[in-house]
Image (tube, rainbow, N blue to C red; front, side, top):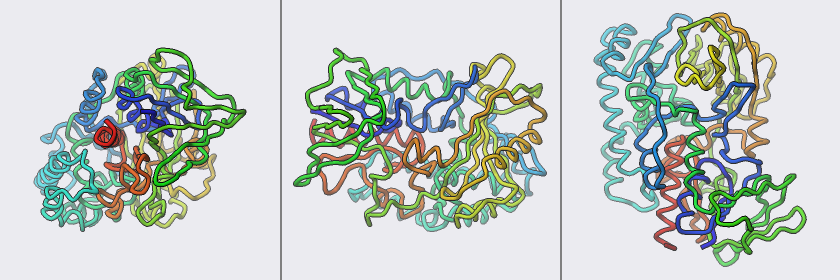
Length: 483
């Protein structure tokens, strides 16, 4: 059958690759290259992961690559999971519960036992959730309902209250809450159930693909079968008749980019017609990898409050004591979260994440130098003073890691996200309870039979491993319906 994938982010590419084993597949994207938020950036010898930077939940990657028939990536284990800074602390955490419980005992009396209990429950939740990762949540599976009822306490309690009920020290609380940001929201809006993610980046083996996160995209592309990519092509409208998409109309932004991926020939199929700057696609199946088209059941776009301010820095430093993943917690993290929740300006002292891949993979920077990506979570709809934000980050970074010479710099913010992805949010639909599992937009349209959805705004949710899993779900549904 003829399949059109709209959007060449990881979700769209993953679905295209799986379906290309059985169907004719064309992928379009408004940008001139594939990868979406997971593209990479080069600045004069420095390589950066432009978006996703954590390689966690390796079992989900393995499941996807095995289903695709692809080889596994070359993965480098990190010696330390995370370094955490505040005005009072510099703490290292390890892929080792024994070492981490000692850290938590230093943070507060009885911290080791609290850490043990907290992580044990988190691991139990992860093991339970993993059983249903590829489920169609629209179907009321009795096992899923049983899981819900058995864990009602962590579904109804939010992350903020849950963590505060266990830990007393500010630093311990901050460490156990920050994953909420990467789930698209603030701790008091994210269900405590999602503490299931904490072991995956804190105590289990944290990995990094040799050559950067973009190697995930490379591996997907390499295992496509006769796929056509059309870049600089913006989807404009779907023609829907009698519950079916009949065709799509798109426009060419500038010069169309046509790439034939592992193709048998270099001809466009007859079901794609180009007249001037307008393209018409007459496919049998349509898959959308874009938030604006994936609506909640009430017809709204849902809640996706977090934007980001990103800096990509190439630096020369003599400091030998750098770590791969880092978090800086401000003197008042609650004030930062409140600003996101209320869509107001963040405090002068703000939290941020920074990533130094060259610590693990020296190929990310010229010899003896380092590439750094910094990420500040912000309310997505505010306007910011970019120059002021740059200065504050550079000053704070120098305070944390010591003197350095800045050789390269590039900045991206919500305006760039809107231009590149037509969406100011960094992570997509947040994982509040009303946007999780059976309440999250389905992977298929309930009114249009041949329309499907992949990516961070459908099930299972946010993050590269879950986005890859959404492609497996779509592939399974299409296989059931069409073969």
